[in-house]
Amino acid sequence: MAVSPAALHKRRLGAYGENIAARHLCRGGMVLLDRNWRCDAGEIDLVLREGPILVICEVKTRTSLAYGSPLEAVDVRKADRLRRLGARWLQAHRVHPDDVRIDMVGVLVPPRGEIEVEHVRGIG
Image (cartoon, rainbow, N blue to C red; front, top):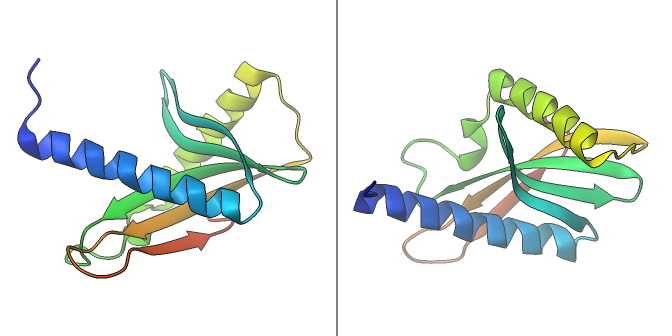
């Protein structure tokens, strides 16, 4: 199945944003455990550990604020879905952390200027 140029650009932009987010979080002391984990219920962008806490992280990347900030892309429904996916990841990997947290990283990659990364802990 052929992928449109727009879909390919969006996929590449998302992967680029996830790389930036992973580097940012690891520089902040987190340990990356998994990327783009999939099951029949969906996908988790990043799974990390921060001390005894397992962190399920959603990454949203945008090139402008025309449709709002990247962080505005996650609503209550998406946060609930991430919680369910996190439970599935824990079950699949037989991991029993002290706590689980859902985080969000917004990456803004403007055509010109500095890339902006915003990390929000505990979105849901």
